[in-house]
Length: 189
View 1: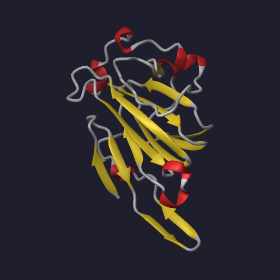
View 2 (view 1 turned 120 degrees about the vertical axis):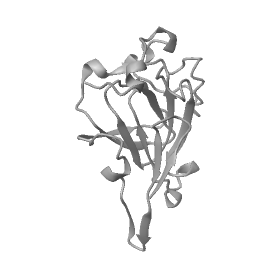
View 3 (view 1 turned 180 degrees about the horizontal axis):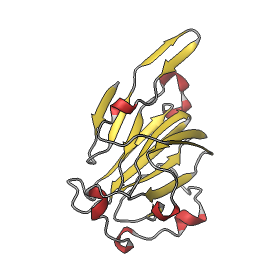
View 4 (view 1 turned 45 degrees about the vertical axis):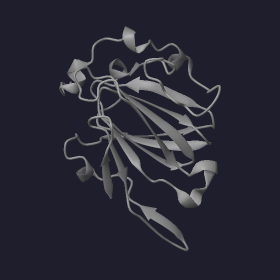
């Protein structure tokens, strides 16, 4: 396993070792010990999305996520909303899953750890599946969003005319959300 620190403080890209032969492959997609600074992941989720679907930006004040793409290809875009963070205002993206053109023989099995206060979104470059582990149970009061076309984030989606939910179309601009200092300082309920 290779753990890479990214441009955004607290975000980690994990590239696990893959073992394969003529039957296929095996890969460990998550280990608790990879994130000693984090809390235990207690819920797993899966979403299947068609090509061109865009989900986000979402953010939580009390929840960390770990994302893995077992099928297809997507672009993950992250933006640090945490006031006072060393990487406040930084936007970063990763392409995960199959290589360009959907080639499954050159698959990126990396996962992304996303701490509280970091806005996260993904767009399906191909039909795809994403799994995500979270360190707290779903809480509607901790489900927040920022508009995916916010000009201050400068997201490069890589698709034209994305398919988005009504909820994501109605998310506010970054300048209109409440302060997020407590997410950076680790205050969690």
